[in-house]
Image 1 (cartoon, helix red, strand yellow):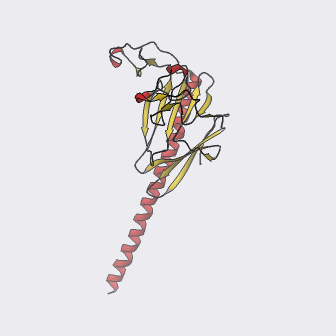
Image 2 (spheres, one colour):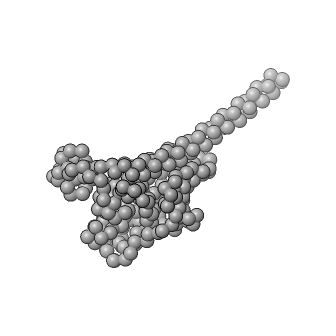
Length: 227
């Protein structure tokens, strides 16, 4: 009987240790994801301040290294993207688990039809973009673009586009797109819903433990912090 009680107590204690370890691992995973996102924002800032160059296909289809990346078009010369370098964040539909690094070769200052994806960053398992805030107010939009323009790394924030009907919220057009809409959408000649908000807050959530971390970007100072 005493042996059985001792074994039972040991099993309970072992279970508690395992639960705490798993919880701690999930907390660390969330912290690392937030840190990586902040580092990627700083990386994009550095691209803008250093005037990083990219080769772009002659048909503006994508970044390239050689002509074979663009067939039947050709790979152009090294150049600093006119609009700059940015990140696109989407928080709807629920549990979006990625964000996009892009360049803006035509000067739209957002991820428009001509915004070219450099890479898509997938968040770790259970980590999602929970919410996007502008000046501590829930945006009400499904997407926000954060862009830094060379050579001063001046920051721009642009939220959901409204000048195309019948297209996903993460797409928009600008004057440089010649009034075209992606996916066969209809152009309705409305202004973009842009904002002069001073601060963007991206909330990451670990859905396994319902814990959150915030990454905050000050548009004016360029400061990036994690809390």
